[in-house]
Image (cartoon, rainbow over all chains, first blue to last red; front, side, top):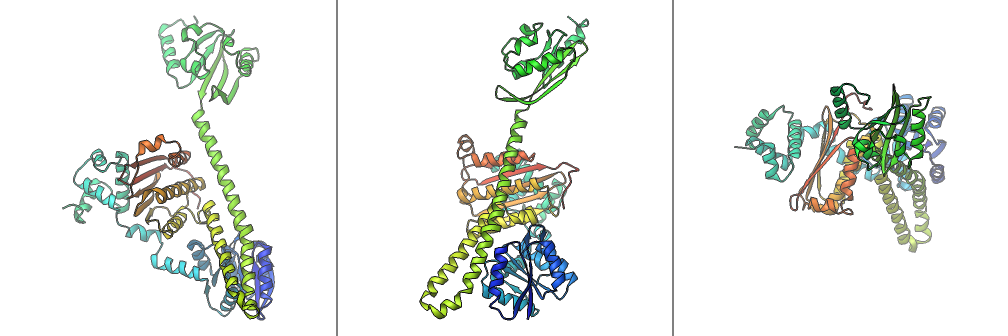
Length: 213
Length: 338
């Protein structure tokens, strides 16, 4: 028998889940809570096998609760059940120790499957969540990676070339039909991106990287 | 004439004449001893400067009984100072102050219209954002939660329908798909109103989501570059920069016909810089600024940027793409929330 606890601030939703789970003979709802405090108390009291956890509750984040539960009750698995499909939420939930992430438009079959999977030490992600995860892992969203990896834009390369050819800001502005202030902003950005200090090092960079001959 | 030394008097006149405030002083009876043009302009008085001198200040305040009363009290034995802040004269917002001097009083006026208008705009924005947040929460928590329960209930019926009414399975599946679609639409509306990502994870993550959604809609390729934003910015700055980015992306989707949009967000020690560039068809900037209706998006961006102390610049010409810069100075010791 799987002992299940539901933490979600919407009664209509908790009732819906409970009534569906009546048909699942191996799942018993041992308790439910509508806010973070009740959830913490209830979970400590019932020591459920699986917690069905909402993320956005009025007094607490389900992600923070997940961390607490995983630390206090290592045998209790957390299955996030949320409307949020953005990668930030998903990643944070997994970092917090959630064993699965179910989107709220999942059907009853999917939900029961997920509960069983998580109970049996597996992990479960809704198909859409898996998609987000894969994209996240393949793209890499570490800020530093992007800063290091992103080359200059076409416009920036153009401006770098003109700088290296010793054109002044106003001259570059006229050539490119933009304002001198924008040229200056570009120059500043290029320096920041390349982590260079001054125009001389920009010129050096331009020559080294064949922006100018 | 209460001034014995001409040099001192000249200095005083030039000081008062060039001060960035309206200034008027009187003797103990209210006779005007010094006044500058700014004061007359602020109160909408069309009299000549020299004609006004030595006449009674009260004679010019007939149209404004409240101010008259304050000035009388200030002149009276109690020497009551007064501050009338952000009062409206001639459609301008003025701060009018009165103080007693050793032998008379001094009145000053300061035009705070620009400041007041910005304040009004800011509170309008704040109200709008609060309303959006309320709506988003209501959608997310109310209708959204019920819909999720509905979806789940529907799903539970499938096996039964399959067994007892196999001819209904097609329509059932269709209904289930529709519920999913409504749920998705609702989620998107709620997110556009107030992105949870922005509140919970900050500007960079929120702009990433914005880019992802725009790209999914097949608009164009977006490169988002950011640097130095490990720490969160003050909430109103994040929200304003997000709304500005949203407006720029939406405009680009609607009008630019671009293939690529570059968005750069860089935090310098003393400022935040948001820069966007597209390679689309551009537009005639002068004409756009004249056209009140079409130019409103641009005006919104400008005012939003101004509301967080930022500077907004746009460069574009037909056929040359559009590039925008929003530069927001950071006050040094401004607390950065984690």
